[in-house]
Length: 88
Image (cartoon, rainbow, N blue to C red; front, side):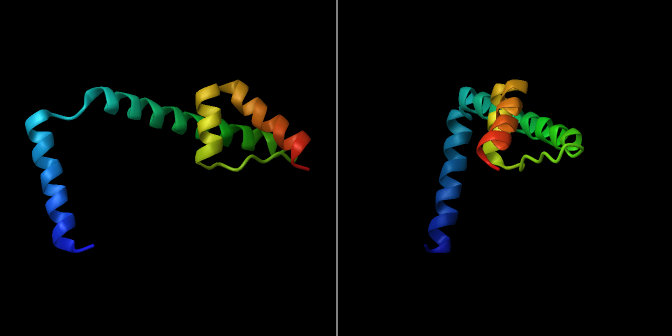
């Protein structure tokens, strides 16, 4: 795409946001989702620290962090069971 088109689209979005304001409900859901994913990454990190004694390792990526974040400790447990039983 042409850089002029991209700049004009960005300016148009900014003007629309200035007139109508940001969608607060969407921002609230997005921020809650991001916070849960970060908490899930922390859960997996601590599971990897303690699981290193037993040879357990769960990769930290967006999908595993989302599972652990939205399901909590049960999600980390499910990921550990999947690692032990399904993935040799």
